[in-house]
Length: 161
Image 1: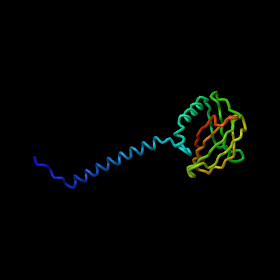
Image 2: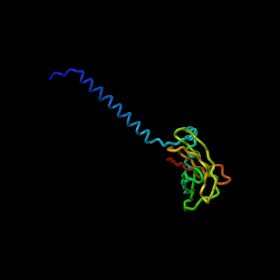
Image 3: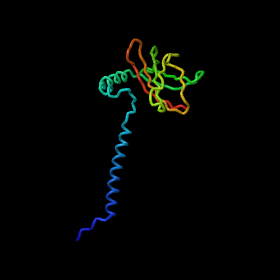
């Protein structure tokens, strides 16, 4: 049986299959990269990578505390940020120095750092001005008196309407 000659339609199909394969592999890598991105915002990821074991130990210590944080916006004569901290036994945590770093996607960095004051046991409040229809990320830090590093940190996302 004689060999069939290579025609233009064959070359077209080979090119289409080749580029379809390349596009599908690229799409797979893009989806995997976006799905596995943790979304953490750190100033110097290289230094954090070098100090990774210390970071894991800090997170383990925090996990053993079992503390929980709830955050939200309340209207108390204006817009206020309310953070409620509870222990593993669901008891309010008092006497902490609580601060919040506010990040917004529009700015791409720290918008402001707010120091909260304790109004009731476990409830920490500070005035805040957030734009309407915004998504903001808050990094909450709670220090015990005399400690240099936070005993508790949490990241919360708020969507304002």
